[in-house]
Each structure stands twice: as structure tokens, then as C-alpha cells.
Amino acid sequence: MMKIFIVGGSGFVGSHLARRLASDNHQITIGTRYAPAARRLALIRGVRVEQVDPYDLEDLTRALEGHDAVINLVGILNESGFGGGGFRRAHVKLVEKLVISCEAARVKRLLHMSALNAGRGESFYLKTRGEAEDLIIAAFENGQLTSTIFRPSTIFGPDDSFLNRFAGLLRLSPVLPLARPEAKFAPVYVGDVVEAFARSLQTDASQGQTYELCGSEVWALKELVEWVRDRLGLKRWVIGLPDTFGWLQGRAFDFVPGKPFSSDNFNSLKIDSVCTDNGFQALGIEPWGLSEKAPSWLGQSNRQIRYRRYRSAARRSTESPPRRDDD
Image (cartoon, rainbow, N blue to C red; front, side):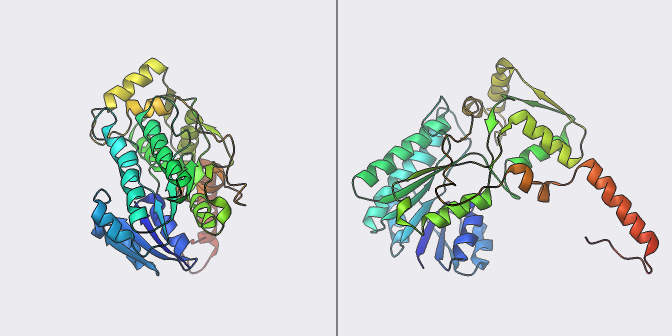
């Protein structure tokens, strides 16, 4: 049993990871800047929530004291401003603080969530992910930390902001234009990602390692969105944009509140998010594919929906008294 502190643990991956690690009887602390937003996680046995400012060295060091390991899940896909400052603050400055605080609190074990293609390409997102990795690797080589880095492709799950975002857009609009429609992904199931974290804590062999994490299927972006459309039973036109118009789309969305897409996202899509060496194998995990897992929450195809309606109607006509079809 370990005492583990998760930075950025109140989000999508963090909520799944907290449950997975608690099932191994670890004691989990979720560090967040706004504790009330993470109260649901405190209901999990073995999990507590602590409000902490990760950019305040004194506050962060105090919070880390007494823990055996730290997991950093902090990351943003878009910044509120321009020029990379937001990415650098979230990905680089925070890791700088974390390395210093780990040493001050005598925490030697650090697991870090990065991203596939970190340090490559033109996007600030990938550049700052790479800078953060460099800081962690340097700390490992200097003997400050025993670290493990994870580089997942796009993560999907029932409560993600990836498939659900496309599903929402498809429900709203009869036409969905896509930048970089042929960009490749190997979407990775959140359950497999958190299993990789859990297993890496069980072995010293993971120390100093960087694991690329990909699902078992490779998709082009347009193909994936069309698949989501079909699962939802919608009739929508998904249009792949040439790069000139895709870039313009990114520039236009740079000024939309919340930035559902951005020019930095466009730059990230220039590099396929596909593993060259899938780390799941080294960890003894056989990953799910998106088409195997996502249908359980995305919905059914039109044919399946019609079949289930027919079967339900047939049951109601033969059963007495009538009852709700729950299967």
C-alpha cells in the first residue's frame, strides 16, 4: 500500500485513476485548486481531496509531505491567450515547481502524464509537453526522482471531451467541417491508461521508462467522426477541409470563447498520433480498440435500434401483463 498524491486528479483521467488505485488499497490524495469541484471523489473509499495551489512551492511542498509517490495529470489542450504562455505555465512551470517540491518533501517517485509526439512539431502544446519531459528526465538522471513518463494518444471514455465533443457537434449541425481529416489516431481507452499507471507502481522496472500508449485500432479523423455519426444514428455530412481552409478554421476558432478548435490544435494534427512502440506490451496489457469499447455508451446503429424496437414491440404483444423491456 502506498500514499499517492495526484496533481490534476479532479479531471477525466484523474477520476478513473483514483478509483483504480483505490482498488489496490492505496491511499489517494487528490490535489486541486478548488476542492468543492472534486467532492464526488472524496466518496471513494481511500480517497481524500485537498485544496492546494500547485504553483505555490510552500503550499505544494506541504501537501506532498508524507506521500510515497506523486502523479502529475495536469494538461491543457488550448490556452486562453496566444503565444504559448498558457501551455508553458500548465506544462512546464508546474513541472518545475513539482520537481522542486518533490525533493523538498522527500518524495522520490513521480509518474507523469505527457502526450504522444511530445517535443515534436510546431504546436505549443507538443513543444511544452517535450520541455516538461526534459525537466523530469534531467531530475531522474541527477538522482532527484525515480520517474515514469506516459505518452498516450487521444484518450477516450464515457465521460471524455473527445468523442463526446464530436457527438455534441454532430447532434447540433447537419454539416461538420473537419481540419486535417486524414490525420491518424490510435485512440486509447481510459481504463487501459489508468491500468498502465497502476502496474507501473507495482514494479521497479518502470522507473526511468517512457511508455507510448495506443489503442489497438488506427483511425483517420474523418473516418472516426463518421463512425460516431453512424453509431448515433444521425444523417450528417462530414466534410474534410483542405489545409488552407483548415488553418483558417483554426484561426477563426482562436477567438471563440472556450476554443473548441484552434490554430495550435491544427498544428498538432500535422503529426499522426500513432505509437512507434506501444508500451502496453511491456506492461502486460492488451489494449481495447475504440470500436470495441465505445459503442457501450455512444449508442447503437440504426439497424440495431430498429431491431431492438421490433423485439420490444413483439414482447409487449405477447406478454401479459405488459412490462418494460429492460434488456
